[in-house]
Length: 317
Image 1: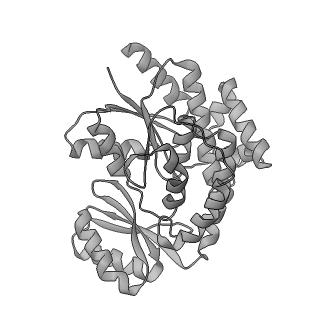
Image 2 (image 1 turned 60 degrees about the vertical axis):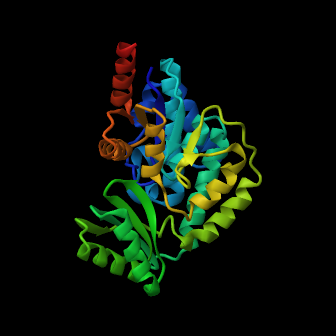
């Protein structure tokens, strides 16, 4: 029998119009979108469905928007299918969607929390001070030695280990640019400076973590209905470590490749990406190929992909 993991995307996967066909076609999803508007005291639906893009890409709007769509899709799937998932994980922000899916965190608490998380992350570092770069096709050990070498130039750290050959670095602009240049010299296929508003997942965001910690003190967590793999360790999170892990996650490396490897090692052979985009599907495909393991990977982001997934699952039974 297949072991199924639901996985949830993070920031960067958003686009104007996301969720509109879900809202219009599934009554159960409307409750999630409307609840988000109600608890955030804003018209998040309008920002998601119509834009403008500069509003959707504001971190404090992006984060609740992606969480809302992921949760709305999940509710439709639970309504349409008797499909049991055995674990879940999310990339950075997606970890909040995973905790909602595992019933550890209510959607209402989560959507308020990620709006504040986005605000704190944006405010932690003034614009024009930090940046991020994607390093493609370079071995992890070589990249880490480059970061050590460049550390005298300023803060530069590994932010995301996404998949074999794709690592993101984060920190102060001068140090990131120097590290990106050195990575190319050492054999990287590409080193691309990213269009981001802050150096996410670096120690420069420690202040955001401190602010988030205060918010988490007021939140009641429930026991996990299914295991959740956390980005911070690449392993299953224990109930009493959830809050600490969410605080650390803001300024720690995202160990996505390690997280998926852990699930595959534990026999997970079916992954369903729930939320905007197909980024995680691409990452998981590369990770499974490196491990020489065949897995099934679906993405569910709109009416068409949702209905296709429902049909595929029904036919497989």
